[in-house]
Amino acid sequence: MTYFNVGEIAGAPGQKPLDGIRILALEQMQALPYATQLLARLGAEVVKIESPGTGDLGRSSLPAMKDPMGRSVGATFLRNNLSKQSIAIDLKSKEGRELVLKLAPKFDVVCENFRAGAIERLGLGYDDLVAANAQLIYCSLSGFGHALEGGPASPYGEWPALAAVVEAMSGIYELKREPGQPPTVSPMGALGDISTALFSTIGILSALRLRDATGKPQRVDVAMFDVLVAMTDIVVNFASLGVRGGLGAVGIMHGFQAQDGYFILQVIREHQFAGLCQLIGKPEWKDDERFANRAAWTELLEPEIRPAVEFWAQAKTKLQCCEELTKAGLIAGPCFSADEVMADPHLADRHMLVAMDRTDGVEEQVLTPGNPIKLQGVPEGPESRVPWLGEHTREILARELGLSNEEIDAYLASGVVA
Image (cartoon, rainbow, N blue to C red; front, side, top):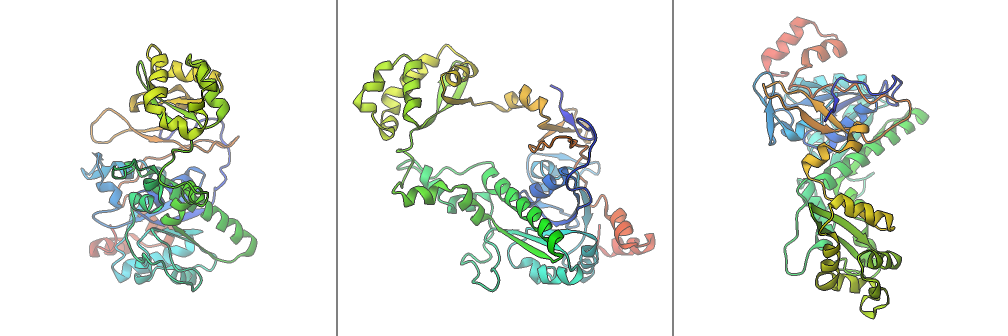
């Protein structure tokens, strides 16, 4: 399989929508780094501030590779930090904070995902940075947000929040929980982290548009809990309509076994159920009162519907099952393994797998999902590999602040930067 390699440009050259937009990111882990990586893919220049020594906490995640200096670079960092520059600044030092305040006027956007209140205690909050840059867009991403325009703070205050925490608080785990069983925690963080990243991206783009129209600064405040309630909108909506404690009244949304694995089938309308009955050789079910409503389909799933569907599917591949189901007007998709995803021709054709060469002697490339936003006439790439910790410190201090080599050496010697 040929991947879209870091450094390549796919398609004809063209202007990117965020060319000229500059972002200073005080970020770590996934939610905000995913957002700024997306903005970089759309043309923004992103400078990432990291802590000397440890850097972004995502660097210590597993699995990992080694950078040219032998330091660990974890998977969370690898998939969220393409096309960025890294400067390492000690924000606990007065001199480090002063450097950030001097850098702020050079950028359109400053964004941070510290725990609520932490960045203000460092003297790098919205008011501090707007005093340095009167047209600044300042985006804060946290578990539970900041008090809005003098209103009350969240009762969860400064709770730390990772994806699973806000996913659980959204109600979706309880809605999907099987009776008598504990909730199943989402293992990948996509719902909690990436959805928050996307809302943050929308907020930043909206604020830039508003700033261009008014010339005024803007604060974007995104709480992961808010985002998860929005993403799992069926929880409160269904409850307000009298559906609680499961999705049994919705219909069939389950996995079924074929010859070579599983496929997902969704049947939530009466005409879909009739089409399924015809396809699997059970036309009599269409007029059987036992199958008269959607709740009944769920109740009869294991004793009757699953055996019939899997008998029909047993000699077919999961892809063949989905092709036949789709032709019959049903909604189905194969459950791919990681190897099948990496070999999928659709993803290759749309440059959705970006490959980065390793620097630690391992031949196999590191893969990261590409940009799913396709704009006509806008090039995909070139993307640069993830930055090594502090790789651009000297370059950024000289370029942005005009510091001499001697001044930068003094900062390096004191540990203010690395």
